[in-house]
Image (cartoon, rainbow over the protein chains, first blue to last red):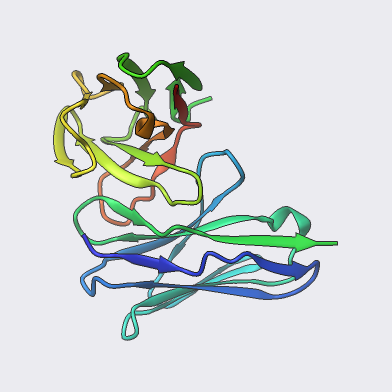
Length: 109
Length: 114
């Protein structure tokens, strides 16, 4: 199984800032992509799927670049409640999802 | 609550003992997954079932680990002769069929082996 790489951070940003995370994947046959959010000592929760054309959900925008094999997550107008670890997830076509190690975001007042 | 449920939430056991965890998936989900997560790491795949069939097992799943899903509904994960290195959060997730179907996780079972 191939790898999913993320910058572990932490990313320290003030409230209201815009922050972006990238995630690279090594298997060009990967078929579907997701961003999950995980709070400390809690289970991962789906934040959003990532579609080929890019997609937006409120303050969150996800992009996929198949040529360069990376996906990105942009968070606008950061809130204190956005502080969490963001996990990049890739389905390589084996019916199992491979998780990155996560990027920690800390939003401060 | 119709989400994924796991039991117990926490388990403390002594090295060498056997432990068993249970997972009840979302009822209409065909697929059930077990992952393990340690501090600072993302979830690592252990095994998954489609209905009652165990279709894939990770190399992380040593001979001491066994998982079942006898009727295609709930699943159990048993660890025999636990070792300190087994201490982790064990996460169960379920999904519908299809590569675009996301996983829905339970709260996890936190295992501590002393």
